[in-house]
Each structure stands twice: as structure tokens, then as C-alpha cells.
Length: 426
Image (cartoon, rainbow, N blue to C red):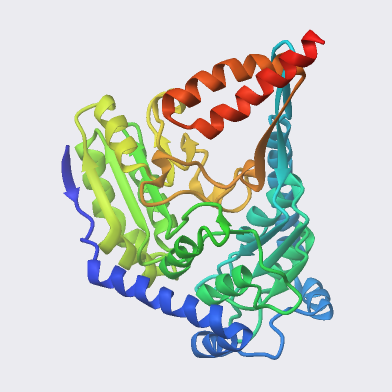
């Protein structure tokens, strides 16, 4: 493969500083509780109310402010996300089977009790992230979902409040960033017990906070600054390719936008058009930083190399703009979500189409998919046996335990063999 444009190198010192900053913030909030949350919120968001929880009357006023066209769009997206989550839940079933006479094994899917849903809102008010987190949790049967989202100039976008309320949030809190995640995990918000799980995307600090809090709480995945990869051949329209790359680049200066193509002509045309597309959007400053820092154009020899490179990068969103794009549903294996053909652009998945937009980044798609209803379920197993079934297990357990040198394990089996054999004899 040939790089026609390379991404900038990551600054290891900068990443180390993020880790150290987050470590200190988590320690302060763990030890200082709500007072420390308030201190960081004042410093970072210029907002430190007595109570971060958004009052019901504030939510009701915000709902009245939402324009009708936005309300219809949010309602449409809610319906799409809910229908897809319900269909996903329908593929999951409790299980019970008798593997040997008298030996019954099973599993159950049990929802998490309490979830903290982080909704980014610093640079943009990401309305969609509210329902992407809340609806699958509620469909799964989660009892409590508590939302945290950063205030902008002391308030939350009315559309976001409407969306979170409609999706079923139990509480909404105007607090952002690391301090929000720590407050949810440590139970620092009055009236909200420590959550069992944190979900939602965010910037580098949010992702690092989730990484450090994992174990204290569960997490969905490490969904950091967004990524788009487009695989394209000579049938792709360079205007569409450039437009869609910029469409994701506006998220964050540290996002990534990658083109992998078999066509040098297409690659050069896209590179040549990027300045025009960047200049066409009001978010040019952020998008341009992303393209300069995280933009890549890779020329590959053929379709096989295109697939190999794309899977090696394990990109969050992958658009397929080639002849017969449907074939790539089977060919590609490492991605967060796939957008097949020109008609299915990434922005639809970000906002309204239904599959979740909280997806793995930084090559995590090699080992995990995105957030879905199943992430909120614990699959737990059980077993029960009658005495003949227990004796069958005991025979094999005793032998293996002794071979391992675990005499106490063996003894639990031996005791049952002897006890149940005597009772059978009597």
C-alpha cells in the first residue's frame, strides 16, 4: 500500500498528561465528594449550582421550547432506535438443557440495576447520544438510568432535555466530563446511589476516566473521538467521499478520517477537493484540524488489500463505496458499524437510523462491537442435579482435582460419592 496522505504522529507526552490529569481528578472526587465535583465544574464549565440535577419544571419548560420539526426528528429517531433494540433483545433467550440424565444447566439474562449515561455536550449538544444510551438500557430492563451532560453557558439544550426525558431518564444532571463520570461512579450526586455501569462516548478525558473507573464500575466500551473510514474504488464519487470524510471530521480535532482506495485518480481528486469541503462548513476550524492531524489517504493494489488494510485499522465507522458493496458485509470483520453503499452515510447512523452510534475506536473493533441492548444484560449461569447426576459429575471431578493436586476440591466430590452411594445401597 502507498500513503498519499499520512496522519500526524500522536504525542505520547500529551497522552500521558491526560492520564495524570484524570487520575488526580478521580482521586479528588472520590475523597471530596460533591464539593470536589462542584469545584471542578466551576473551573471547567463555569457552573457550580447547589444541585446539579435538572428540575422537572426546567425540563417541562425546555420541552415547550423544542421546535416542531426538531421534535418530529427526535421522535422518529427514538422510534428507530427502540425498534432496533427491541428486535435485538428478541434474539436473546434464557437457556436450560439437560446435558446428562439428572444434570440441568442453564443461563439467564439479567439487566444491570443502575446505569450512568454520559451525553457529551461541550462542543456540540449531542442530542442523539441521549437516546443511544438510554433507550437500549430501558429496553433491556435497567431499573435506573441517570444522565449527566455538561452545561453550556449554564443550561442544557432543550432538544437534549426533551430527548433524554422522552427516552426514560430517571434523572438528568448538568455536569460534564471527568467530574460527571466520577460523581456517578462514586455516588457523589445527592439522591443517586453509585451506578453499576457507565456508558456513553466522549473526548480523551472522558475515555480515560472510563478506563480508570473500570472495575469500580462496568463500562460499555472505550468510545473516544470518532473515526470514519471509506473504502472506495473507481466507481465512487470523489465529491461524496470528501463530503463524508468532512462530515465526521467536525466532531473533534483528534478524530480520524481515512480513505482506502484502489484508485489513484479518486484519491488525488478527494485530496484536491478537501479544502473546498472544509471551507464549506461552519465547523471548519475543528474539521480542518482533524484532517491535518488524523486524515489519511491510502492507495492499495486490489480489493483483497483493501479489505486487509481496513480490517487492520479496525475503524469505528466504515463506508463502502464500491461496485457490489453488499459483498463487503461478509468480507469485512473489524469495524464498529458498516454503511453499505452511497445511500447509507455515516451521519444517518450518528443521528436517526437506529443502530447504536456508541462504537469502538482506536482499533478496539478487533475485539468488541458497539453499545447494544445486550451490553446492559449480565448472562449468568446456574446448574441443578439429582443425586445420580451428582455422582456422575463427582466421578470425573474427583479424578481431575486429584491430578491437579487440589485435594479439597476432590474431597467435595468424594464425600458425595460415598454419601449418595450409601443411601442408594440402603
